[in-house]
Amino acid sequence: MDLCKSSLYTALDPTPSACHGYAFPPGFLWGAATSSHQVEGHNRWNDWWAAEQAGALVHQSGEACSHYELYEQDFDMAQSWGHNAHRLSLEWSRIEPVEGAWNPEAVAHYRDVIRALKQRALEPVVTLHHFTNPAWFTRRGGWLRRDSIERFARYVEYVVQQLGPEVTYWLTINEPTVYVMQGYVNGEWPPFVRGAWGKAIQVCYHMARAHVLTYRLIHQHHANARVGFAHSAPWVMPCRAHKRWDRMTATLRDCMLNRAFFGLMGNRVHGRRTPAVHLDFLGINYYMRTLIRSAGWGLGRILGRACHESHHTDQGVLSDIDWEVYPAGLRAILNKFARLGVPLLITENGIATTDEPLRCEFLKRHLTTLAETIEHDRIPVLGYLYWSLVDNFEWSEGFRAHFGLAAVDYATQERVPRPCADLFAQVCRSNHLSNHQSTF
Image (tube, rainbow, N blue to C red; front, side, top):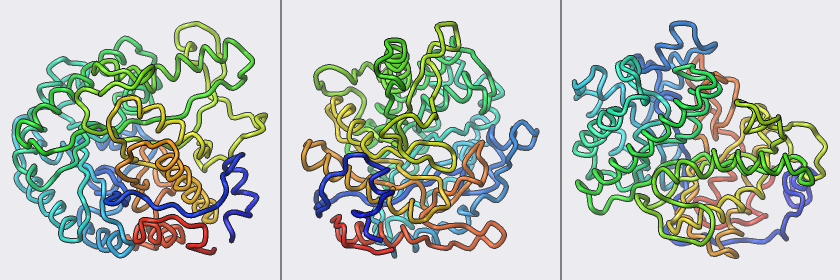
């Protein structure tokens, strides 16, 4: 399939640029991402597992992808595809299953995991908190308590002392605004609190301060470390640009999702470019555009609602979980966060679909947009990590959302590479993007 002539290609981006090749910067990081609870299996000591077993969630993670046992096989696969980096997360609840009691076997395991990556010339990008908390931490109030900052910092300091020399890139927290919205506003994730805006702000503040403290701690132990966090960055637009209330609502939504957390850290993401504090780089998780329609001004409605009506001339296709595919938004997001004055790293970008030609086109279009942004806008980008290496447990979506470069047969735990893995491998190996690299 010629991606430059495909009608679907045009649908993904209403104004695609001319097809030509791009060279990425030397040393560019190429790879994929995973997170512990989504792939390891049997994370029995965290709050998600407790909620699953209590029936508070429809889906159970169970064995997930058995990555805890099969990580070397998965890393062999990534190496064979030309990846030179891999993002993973450490499971806090494995390392500290009981408050104040460290599990040396878990630490030894993660040391082996990191060394397995380095033996395959895969740069580890290590996330310290990816949505899950130790069950004991949640029982004592979780991130609502101010001493959550010190509890998290104690864990981080221990981990960095044990694993620090092996790791350069650290992400303290993954998508704090998603964690807050899903756990304390929408009430769909642990701790299942709904509409508690006061608590949501409190948790957001504690997580921001936890990042600042752990940023300093990591640098105290390893001066050459590069520390950031992974930010969920949807491109937010008004549904009806001619409607003032839609514009105002979209601005408020963007402020909540794309600005508030940075403000709590002492940074600005609007106005003139200023060097960020407590950030060596920023992880960008970009998946979609969100079109926002006003829903009134009462509490709980002020951020509007996402509009999925097909009345936009530039409406992109939807993934299997109804996220709008909109590659142009990646360029807008990168320009937005470049104002922080630090390098950016694409820590997640992918699509949940069983339509493999669509997945390939998604990847090609987003890589083209990324390359154009680096070349024409002079945005400093460190690398691109696709979400995800393998299909996995996608939180409240269970196992129905297929993001992986490789499919997983959950009955046998067999990995089956998808066509897009070959497309991506050609880019990773050559550090170059060409419209003639692959045919499907």
